[in-house]
Length: 132
Image (cartoon, rainbow, N blue to C red; front, side, top):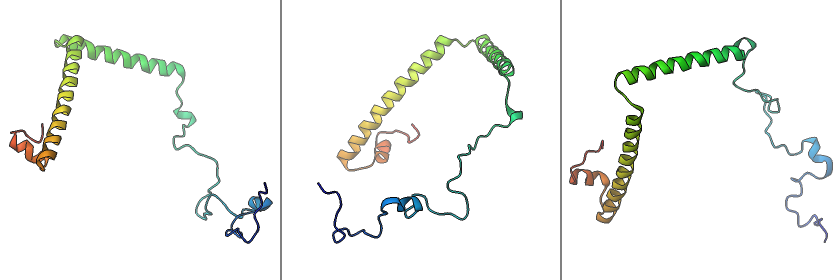
């Protein structure tokens, strides 16, 4: 099979580089810019200076201070009468509430579509507040 086409059938004859012409920059992927260097090396926007680097020992000390601070906050909350089990129960109840609310929103949307109205109108019809 011949992969070369006659020049009469090639409508883009002058646009396609041939041979080593592509190395000369006949067609470039990146536009030429006089403002900045387009083909420069990558520079991270988050460059850390030598003075900002923290030694591992300092990092461990900071983490230990943070752990102690959190332990103190936990102890204060427990002294105020809060329990971890209670928190987990409240989280479970919030998940259940959100699931029920999602189902109710879906049902209101379907009813609104059947009645040819908006869900906003249904809120007032059923005595619901928009903030709920």
